[in-house]
Length: 413
Image 1 (cartoon, rainbow, N blue to C red):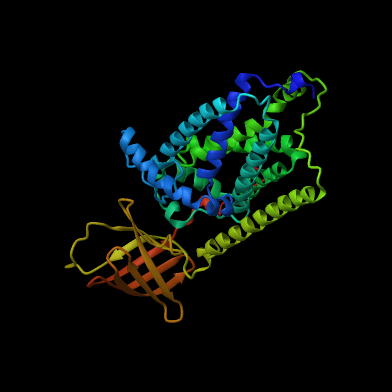
Image 2 (image 1 turned 30 degrees about the vertical axis):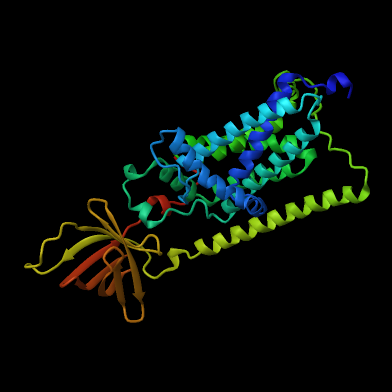
């Protein structure tokens, strides 16, 4: 490379300084559990940052919600958006100071290379994690009884998307495979093809998050932008190849030359150990999540959503404000009563198949109700017992949902 080609313009150097600082700060403060090592290294700065963000928001921003850090399952909290604003401001200030302090550097080729390494591993590990949980189907679980008995219009957009993705095992494997292809980013020679494929995956994730109200918009947008950044050196080459039909050779970043053998071997040892530990860690994490979700409620006795056929009680019994629509006998998260007004009341349901007994414990009021049951047929259930202080007899029929009973067909007229 000639000196002229090696000379960056002022705009290029200034732009790179800002991007370098912004991207690295994002990786640190929006780690999203990618590497436990980073969390440990920056544990103390993160604690200070969690205190600084709400103070900054209170002093300078009129936010609708307090910008305090809390675990909520959302990556788009007020805390997250204020954090993004702060690291952007830090990057601007850092760029200004860096530009004044360093006016002699002709280029930042080596820093550029190491920045791409950081982005490659951040995106690669992030998507590998998402891909592995698709294989174990723990991100999008199969539609449970609670979802199946809920009115379609009562779904939030995210619930609609999760139900759609959760229905199909095959689609989960297909999407998981597309995300796992991000491992190509771990290697310099396959960076371009990895970034190209991952860009499509990241774009899909980003649009689902935006258009279905999934609260991971900040991180998914970053993944998309990081992929674009990794592809940037080959934009012209890819345009010539795909749009103009020209023969093209991809540009590949040269790794910094390491002359000392021990340092060279140390570099690759650390790299492959990091990859191995990351993959093993993510696989173990996916396995743990699989164990948590593997308690398939379909294996429980009497599993199903039972529609009320008749509900008999004494003539002088007190009137009730709510009438049962479904009795849901499932797992810990989808057992309870669905009322006619579509309200759901969770309950713990214990079944004694030996003595033909059912115990229903409503979680909100911790009241126990005991029934004996009979099964005139496979899909019919009759309960006799006491609900509160009144004797009742309830006849139920197991509902069959086309969504989960219809099988795959090659021919559909």
